Image 1 (spheres, rainbow, N blue to C red):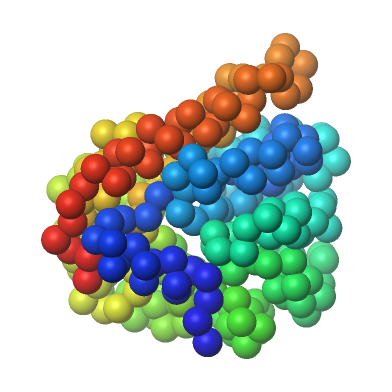
Image 2: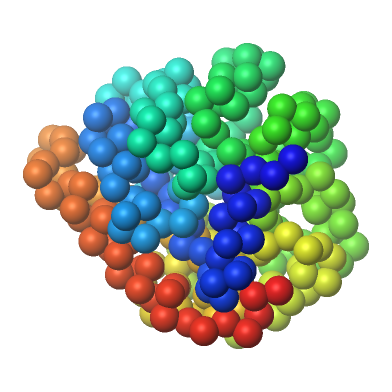
Amino acid sequence: MTTRIDRRFATLKEEGRAALVTFLMAGDPDADTALAIVKALPDAGADVIELGMPFTDPMADGPAIQAAGLRALKAGQTMAKTLAMVRGFRAGDDATPIVLMGYYNPIYIYGVDRFLADAKAAGVDGLIVVDLPPEEDTELCLPALKAGLNFIRLATPTTDDRRLPTVLANTSGFVYYVSITGITGAATPDAGRVGDAVARIKRHTALPVAVGFGVKTAAHARSIAAGADGAVVGSALVDALRSSLDADGKATSKTVKAVTSLVRELAEGVRGVARQTAG
């Protein structure tokens, strides 16, 4: 079964360019503003949209994304509201892939079967669940694949050639390569090392490889796009959103534009690369 993610990466491969994958926290800084931002992302140049599922204990996230999750929770964001946000986006866009990213706990509390059915019905295309290793694929990964959702895995600089086949066994959609060890938004990736890592992963899989963590500027995105199938930007967008808020952490008239302006710059960076590695 082909998903929106599969179709989008296939189209980009034909066009000979990498994807710009954008991450924002669902419900940050409030449900209405978050939906307005997400609706504006495709026109600004986002090819794939990742939405964070707010959680009270986000151990792999850096300060910017942790703060975004807390803002969203404070504004009343729930899993049901996150799925409603996807439905609201789908009302006007049936093509752009949406991936929900986060931790297993909120899904478990919602109920796995109910979550998968509701996510699929809302128009979600894939899941990234950072705290479920391949050894626990029966918990969520295999049921998600059965429900027609892509299950996207993280590979890191410490994922060696012995571990990679296990990590990739039930992965679909794309592989998310975490270019630096540590928390999100902490450092800047080395494009040369990233290119070598992507090549190594591609010896094990035909899936596209998108690279994230530390991609902050158009120049970073351009250098990543030269050797990968996608550049993922999260903390920089969350920072742009935060810097547009008022003293009480509420949205202002500048909030939507603060995010979309940066996405436009990043998209220009990604699209300015003629890629030889589109395989």
